[in-house]
Image 1 (cartoon, one colour):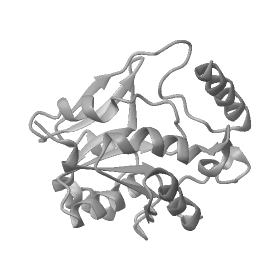
Image 2: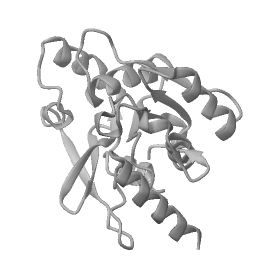
Image 3: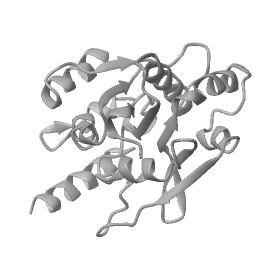
Image 4: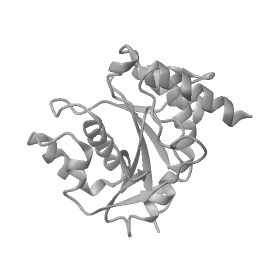
Length: 213
């Protein structure tokens, strides 16, 4: 059985936010907290240590750790010259996890504040002694950034990106043994609803208010 103390968590928040007027959506307020602070508060209890993958506003991201875990979070940037997107952020996070002797990394997206509170436990339980990648799935669709990753695959991912292969997460995942865990919709909202636009942020505000009732 894989224990929580074997798992590092990473929030992948390195996107360009092109549909949010290029403002850093991960730091936009949702209620009285930033989007990343909501995500970190939900994610931190599921892992042993939490880092954030971000390519700008590093000090602001790091400071979130002071409010969640009473010390700054480590913020890691994408590996240079290996492309952009979640796969590059995943590589840097896996490098950091391996450097600190974590055999497993769990990842979540930096724009999805309502993901399941049992996400990591269920993904880890499906990894079969930790030998496979496990990806969350909702309504039949994979959620590639919500994954469980053996860090022994770090060099393989580095080679994949170094060769200029696809930067799509599932393209690399399909080259390895992997599995999916299905998560049901709760209420009217998909648990992997993500915020890309100001309209999405307004909807998230409504969901947050409904949850508080």
